Amino acid sequence: MLKLISYIAIILIGTACSSDKDNYVPIENKKLEFTIPSNFPDPTYNIALNPPTEKGFELGKKLFYDGRLASDGVISCGFCHIQDFAFTHHTHIVSHGVGGALGTRNAQPLHNMAFMKEFTWDGAAMHLDLQPIIPITAEVEMNETFNSILKKLEEQPEYVKLFAEAFEDQKINSDNMLKAISQFMIMMISANTKYDKIERNEGSVFTVEEAAGFELFKTKCASCHKGTLFTDQSYRNNGLPIDPQYNDIGRKRVTGLTEDMQKFKVPSLRNIELTFPYMHDGRLKTLDDVLNHYSDGMVDSETLDPLFKNQNGTLGIPMTTEEKQQIIAFLKTLTDDDYVNDTRFSEF
Ligand code: HEC
Ligand code: HEC
Image 1 (tube, rainbow, N blue to C red):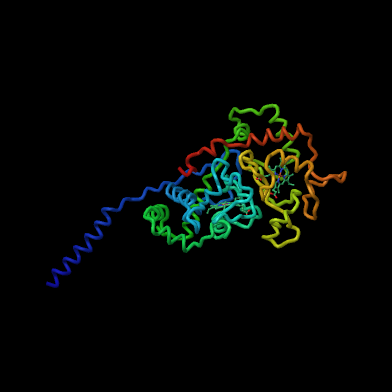
Image 2 (tube, rainbow, N blue to C red):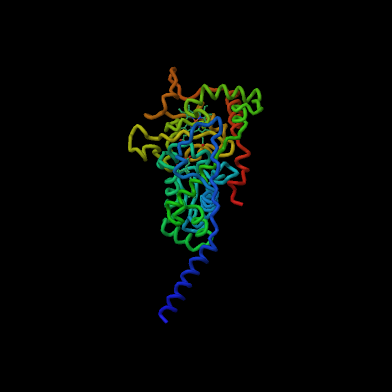
């Protein structure tokens, strides 16, 4: 009898195991090709530590567009970062989150994140994997906790499956969640503008106006909006008067240093035609407004960038109306239609 029971037990265990094995389909989770455009520098993101895979990317994209990451079930990353506008929050001067709560800053575009050293307007996030913690936990953005999000995800069979396919440890945890979102974001490379095609000798040419604008840009703007990424990734004060409504002290918020008062990260100007309104608080509506700010709108302060202090005592970058239009024509060659229409990054 004992023999029989143990025999049955063995069969049961045996079948349990073998049926598991029979059902086990080796997960095909191919590595995605991370291609550095030939006119780009090396990425700052350590790809080897979190190489994007098909399933990791798919999971990251699903999370990016999922309102479950917010306490109200509505405000996803993609709510504020809209693809048509190079992943900015169109029409919103400062972003608005859960319950319509207003933030104090204009949503930044998302592109070429793998090449950036620090994130947000003041560099508060030192690593891309950590950046989403800010919007997820901010009261005025998604107002959620990781524990609560993970619980919601565990209840969704689709997520259980995707996490298991995407990561070796198969776990639904915050580490894997952040890694997946990063995998999605590091694949978001925007490098197919007219400017890029000209730089890579792919057969495009500037119009006369654009070419004149490019020359002006190189002498007047490129010291900060530098190189192929159009930012030297430094923090500078470009002469915007402080808005008492927000009292945003910029980089000083992160370093505590008086010398960093009102300094903000030099933004990349890629897709700038699409990412209006402009500046950290979206106070300037159009590119004309921006150019007028640089020529005539600057206010002096202790931390105003020395580049804007002219020898004759005036402030700003002297430009004629024609020169401004030429620079704007050049800036429009930085629009990447392929990127904003790339269905790999689209919600549907
Ligand atoms: C309520 C609107 C809102 C939501 C939701 C939101 N963001 Fe943002 N995002 C912003 C704003 C505003 C900034 C600029 C923040 C700052 O400078 O303090 C920003 C900045 C960023 C940056 C930095 C970009 C750079 O160039 O440094 C990244 C990356 C980012 N968001 C990714 C995400 C991800 C991923 C999510 C979802 C987990 C998300 N965001 C949700 C509004 C939002
Ligand atoms: C001394 C450095 C410096 C120079 C020179 C400079 N900029 Fe900027 N630029 C910045 C900084 C810093 C910001 C962000 C300021 C903020 O939001 O508070 C900025 C913001 C911008 C923005 C808004 C971007 C956005 O995403 O909202 C545009 C457009 C722009 N600059 C264009 C230009 C042009 C065109 C020139 C040349 C005529 C120029 N800049 C020269 C430092 C500079």
